[in-house]
Image 1 (spheres, rainbow, N blue to C red):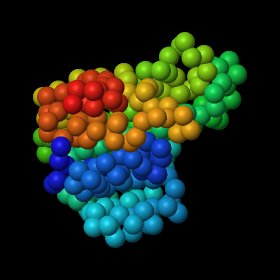
Image 2: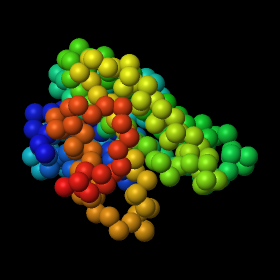
Image 3: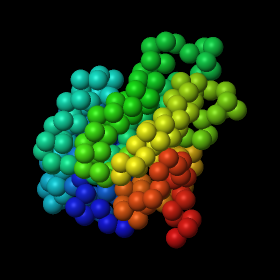
Length: 230
């Protein structure tokens, strides 16, 4: 799989999901247009990537604020002239509490980051992709976030919502050349317990970014599905 010639936007680039994806897309030859909430980390990350010969732009962007998202997408689009792939990797789990015990402030932050942030990025990027009649948007969902868990209520609601949002946007974008899918990260345990290497699951994202998956849209795909099939 090759991403040479493709501009790939990755949100949450310094997070547990985002960091391995930055490396995987860089190895595949992508031009990286990435965002991170941590403003102090953005300049250093861009410098590190460029020193390794990777074409990259890193912008601070807090998905909690609509104006940040609008500004970031506009600047990245203007800089590279196109956006071929978007990976919405900025997600947060929040406290492991049931709905009845969930404080409002962390609830707002989880929903704002996982749902509103994903929606805003999609809303701002889709017009660019529709104009160029091509593009791949990859969201993150988690099928383990279900009622049986009984905890992490805000995360549960946000993941179910992103799943539905993905299918909705895929239906709305039908016939435009833009495809929208979600990768199910349920198999990824917390860092202290995971037995998977990043290459075990990042290939799924790279495959969805690549033209090999050009006919796939509106789907939820397990993070290990591509590896199992190879």
